[in-house]
Image 1: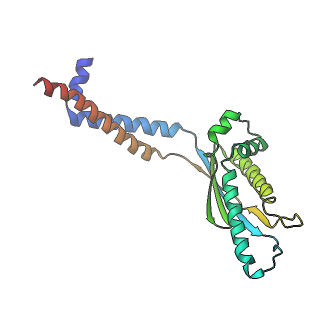
Image 2: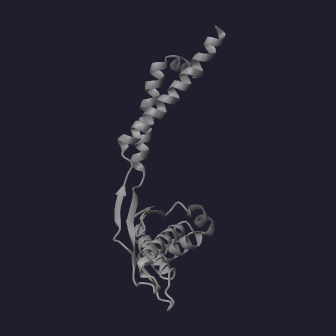
Image 3: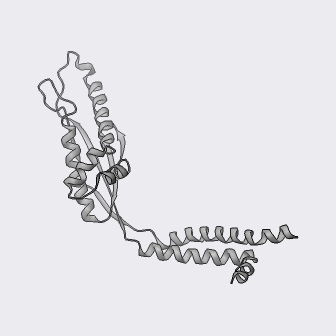
Length: 205
């Protein structure tokens, strides 16, 4: 058996083509059996609810803009905070151990600030039902927490954070793309094996 393998890999072109074809079929088959992933994206809008009492209103717009930027930065930081992630999952009815929460914090929810008043959040879930539960829990927790960030002297919130409707889409790995990736990997393995089979003969010569 070993002799046949060595003989097979002694022909580089045949080895590369056969390995590429086998890996392409394997990758395509695996991609076809994988369950779809549900990707979710939605935006938080930060709106000024009331004007803070200042002695110089000519600068109040600038201060409000800077304050909304700080609110946006704080909201993004919550998405990576283990305690917040734990609360979001628990409120959504999804059980996770503390070790699992620590492992996924910083990766499960991805936030990006597009402007001082627009934060976009994206995440993936195993199915549409789980995705919807996480959206409801996350949007509620972030909005409620944001109410306490910037307060007037009368302890009234100055900013309101509202979530847009989510965009939910199921995605699969296209078998053709998986096959192409497999072909590259297989070709590399075939070339490496052919080289390993050829090198001892060269050294012996």
